[in-house]
Image (cartoon, rainbow, N blue to C red; front, side, top):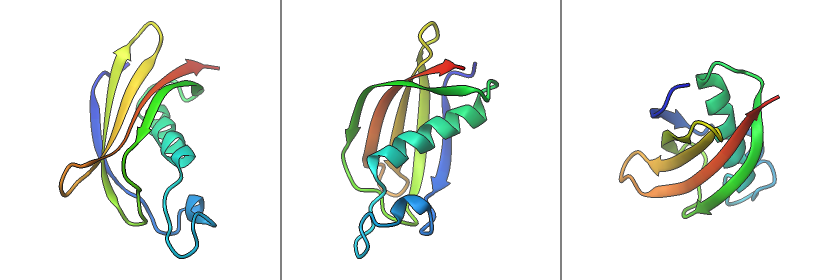
Length: 107
């Protein structure tokens, strides 16, 4: 398993998570941040059959808007428990959008 990883992603305005959340002031829901974080980990790690086991803690500091460009920083905290820290940062000013500690398991 890879330990520390960083990537940059742009959140597309037509991402289905924005549908109805909220029509005139779209914000990426927290569940989408978790889902996209797990999806990144699944694509960047060998076992594609990984799934979310638990959200140990999560802090959502700022709303993520359509077309936001994010620095996604991922760190393996504990290999035995497959525990990861994921930080979403604004690429312009490095303000933190979200910080997660999530546990994954192989199906």
